[in-house]
Image (cartoon, rainbow, N blue to C red; front, top):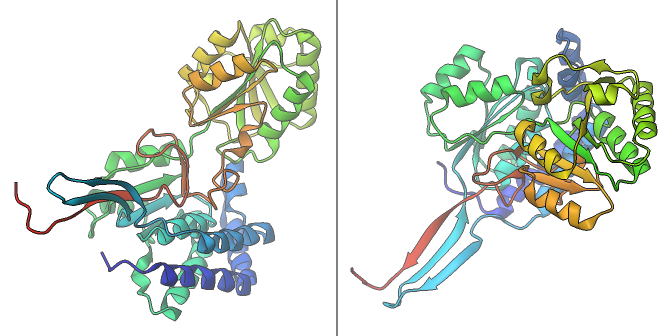
Length: 398
């Protein structure tokens, strides 16, 4: 690994990147248009993630500027201790070393995730999907320009233009030390990386998020949150897939009927169990495996539940461990739900769409981890670090 760049140098590169992206926005959007025209897949979510427009360019610039304004995450003292022999012992944050990011379709990952990794003092290896190659190459070219203009080696950001087989071979036998891999994409990509990687992998991105409408719920609030969480951005891993409705909800029939009509008007395909199907036009569930699916599409499942305990059990059994929310006016019930549901982010009376590094005040995110080690949920600047021990003595022996 190269010597750690000081914070002033890292910030200078990030600030220069923000300027270059603004200056080269048209070039990036033209390259992205070529990627979009070449994409012949039918995956609605992937197509949405692939697109770069003015709003996404603005998001990239904002992410870089916010990162440059953040305190240095490296060298932060977490623990200090004076040994009885007067040795000074401390534990401080440190870079991982080399972080590899493997991702599908999203050119903004080339900026946001790489920016977080770079600010955290890490060397970065980027392996984007073939569908976004033209967009990614433009962005990596800007990374190299920003690095060189600040007298930094281009090796801090490397793009791996590999085929699937070449990627597999690299994971199994890398030509350099890799300290951490972060896959950003669907279940197939994650399993591919885990099967072949020889270093730690942070699992990121699988949603299958649940919402429970408790018997004391404000039903208008519930409808508004369900619609937002489902359709605001169907390609997001924090989008809603499953809704559990308490069988003792007052006016349940009217609520369910109105909810079904509202979702249908938004062109959402609705699947349900038999109890819910009695209150509206839905497609009856024929395969229970649907409870395990993350849709990333205009699809949703509605089911009836016998209460709080049943809802918690079903969420913990079927969800992806990403986000879950309860709609209720009972504070005690909300607290028990949030303490008992085994998800990275738990909500009370709010949309799952807020599970995002920027929305949580992290100035962007490297990924949203559903693992429990070493950090869960959105991984921001302060989380993309490891630690090491510093011991200072004057001749002590044991």
